[in-house]
Length: 203
Ligand SMILES: [Mg+2]
Ligand SMILES: [Zn+2]
Image 1 (cartoon, rainbow, N blue to C red):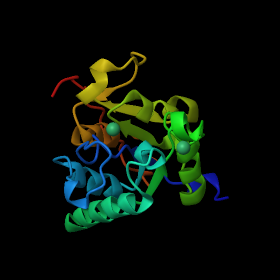
Image 2: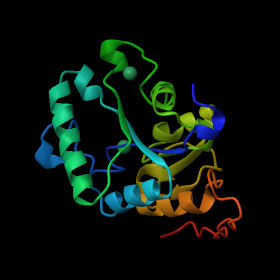
Image 3: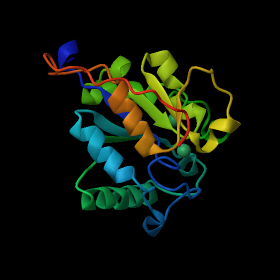
């Protein structure tokens, strides 16, 4: 296991409705479309030293609506679109289960299983990491794992959440928030920490 100082902070991203448009049970690569500003957000986060890791619930696999090959085809398209913007993901972790079909599992969000697996495989510091998604279940594991949740506004009004959870408009705004908030994880000795900006809560 890597020593603590070698661990990298991650930004964990939900896929559907966060990084790409949510097309239910997406299986056609042609349907993969980045949300505006998403590739730029990934590039900025990686440029700032974060590992950017997708963690996604894909119960359509367990329910037979799409196959692993379908999923891999959509992932290849997503990788291609990000590459066209000069960036990439550091990892993709998938729960294919559905509790009603395949029984309970420890990897379907909000369970922390996939985040822990990513941390073990990629050498990530979960407590220094950010959890971003358009549903509470995407970010809830942060409460257990010690990281920082950031909820996107799209569905924020619909979900029950503790009042301290920050809500931002989209992935670009989440990136602004993260880059302002992060606890200067590495090699920033001697640099002034970035000034905290007051988050207006809108826009
Ligand atoms: Mg989503
Ligand atoms: Zn699972």
